[in-house]
Picture (cartoon, rainbow, N blue to C red):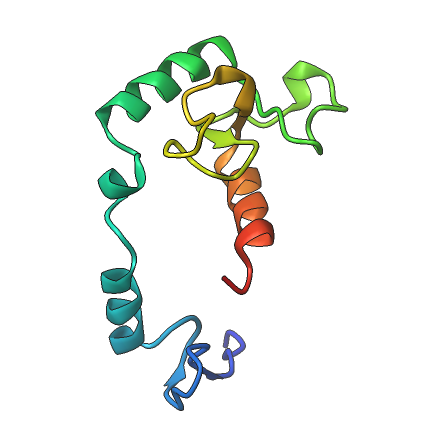
Length: 118
């Protein structure tokens, strides 16, 4: 018989609901509704085209962790990160010198580290 995972309290401040992990459905819905649509944050067709073109010429992860490894030992890049963290609406949003190709795993980790608590 597999081990059972303990229920956890929803991480939304003030919510006492027990969940198997992550936010409870009402809090998840509220959090999604509060976040602006990607197009309003600059992640539109222009950005999708520019990042796809960048990934064609930079197919491997360029994060700090991967940059020390030989190219073929790096993760495949699937996302383009803005080094300054300001996204496509920032002053260097479409400046390729402000981009780095990253794997989903490494990009999510970097974003969580930079935006924790905001």
